[in-house]
Length: 163
Image (cartoon, rainbow, N blue to C red):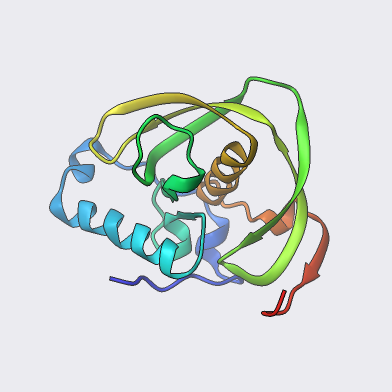
C-alpha cells in the first residue's frame, strides 16, 4: 500500500523518533508496514525513506538494495540505527528529499561509517558503509533525530521537474 509522504513544514519531521521494540518488529502489522515503506520509496523514486517521512515517528528507515553494499541483495531495513564515523574524512555532495520536494543542496557528510541496527527480522546487524551508501544512511538517520537536510545544506536551490 502506498503511504502518504509527510511534507515540510510538519512537526513530525522535527522531533526525535521513538525506538521500536523487538516484539513490535515481529508483528504481521509491522512487517506489512515495512513492505509499504519499501513500495512507497520505489513509487516515489527515493533511494531511502524514514518513518517520520510517512507520518510514523518511529526509528525505522529503508534503503534501496541497488545502493546498499550490505551483504544481502534485499532492500535494507534499519531499525533503531546508530552510526559512528570510522574516518574523519567528509565530502560535500548534492542531496534532495521526498519530504522537501523540488529542493536540493550541498551537504557535508562522513565518507565512511560503522552502522549498528536491528534488521526486519529483529536480528542485530553491524556493518561498514562508505560513499553514497554511507550518505544515504546518514541522511535517513537524521530524519530519525528530527533533522532535515535543509538544516545542514549550503547552496539550497529550487529545481524544476525537467532537471
